[in-house]
Image (tube, rainbow, N blue to C red; front, top):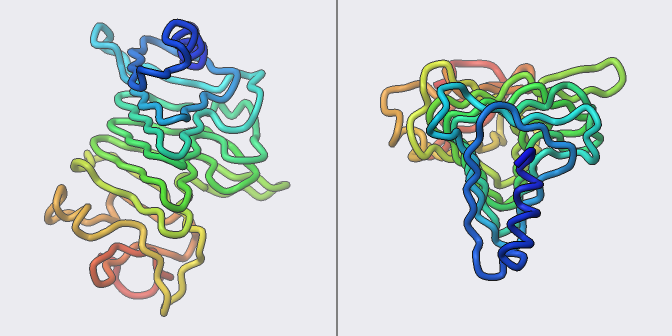
Length: 239
């Protein structure tokens, strides 16, 4: 198929709008250009991965004539697993809402790069709603996604709404970098949890989370606080 969205539409027609089959896998080769939002809803479980016959990393990009804001919209109760893929916003469209991936359900990223997504709102790269789940493992780079308001431009890669947290399903590879912004601005007396200690420490013992996960908010860093890794204002040593 020329696009993932088109493949889902054809599957809808063949399988009766997913009334009996909820699991679909798309094996990609080369560059896939999407011109509309790929909506994953109604309890669908979608996997997007590199085809076994290719050695090059495929990419999914926004087209120059993209209609809408977000590239992937993962609804409540639905799951999206992306592995060995690059997601590229193409800097073609400055969205007025979330630009890359909006998560109300569950998103799992394995060996994924998300880059060049632009928005005038929070969550240029990935927007994780309260109660949603984002799992990461392998080489994961979510950088270079920006909000632009007027002449002001700043990194806004993964936006965690209140109570949303990163979960580590396997160790992150060297070279991984995930930029974080939280809905609530952390204070010295009120740090904001971005991941549980057990989630990171179990898969990456003796590693420093600051080598892989960084604050997109200038003047803030990540520190171990009780049983969590939290975003806190700079000052003092980060773990």
